[in-house]
Length: 320
Image 1 (cartoon, rainbow, N blue to C red):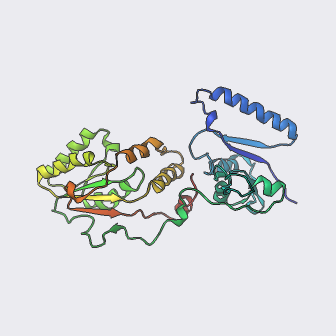
Image 2: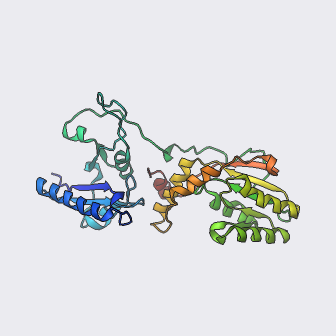
Image 3: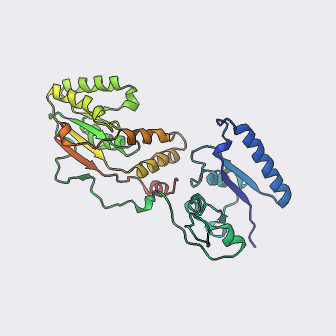
């Protein structure tokens, strides 16, 4: 006979201390939970995710915390565990006249953990499984057989020693630019210019000028979404008489947002997720890079995941 523990897990960003009404909402929430406990007269634990971090469903931070710290050393039997939730991704008219579910995070949460999932109707009323669909980016469908760069007839990614050039990156935050830069260009002797590291645009420009005057190739590892942001660097290259190539990172916004949360989750909270505004600003300023801007070549860089089996497993989780 199995022994079960009842755990309630809820996304409650509105209860955050940073919200104006957070204190009152937390008090109301606690009172409501107290009333539920009195009514049911059974033991249960409840966890509320109050921020957009690794503890928010469908991410499994709360589950991991429970397993590691709150289950008194008992090994969880996933095969006989299950999760019941109404954020199930059910499509419109899954029941006659009923609209679609507003989200699918509960179903994704259960899939991330690897346990069975039921809607309330399926579990309590024994109805048939309703039609559903997942929303958002599914990392498991990310192609694995794409070339690293297109056109494949392009010259090598890094020029031989002794030749000088500028490479300007274009791409969403969290699209793999810095990892690519370090692996393919910095290791080949290119000077790495990155505003996250240097802090200001002016320092980036000075670092770029210094490198080119010393006959060193340079890679501009910023998002550079607009023609204006790229022109400042192209003009420097022209003044120094060196060619410029553009590496356009083709990761979609959905993939970049996924990478953003993967970095956060996989770093044990050391890397904080970028806010939505970082992606929105990129979109608002984006202009497709073209040869006419002064590039010798515009190379498309595909995102290819690199990591061990454990890291791939973490990458393949649903994050939104």
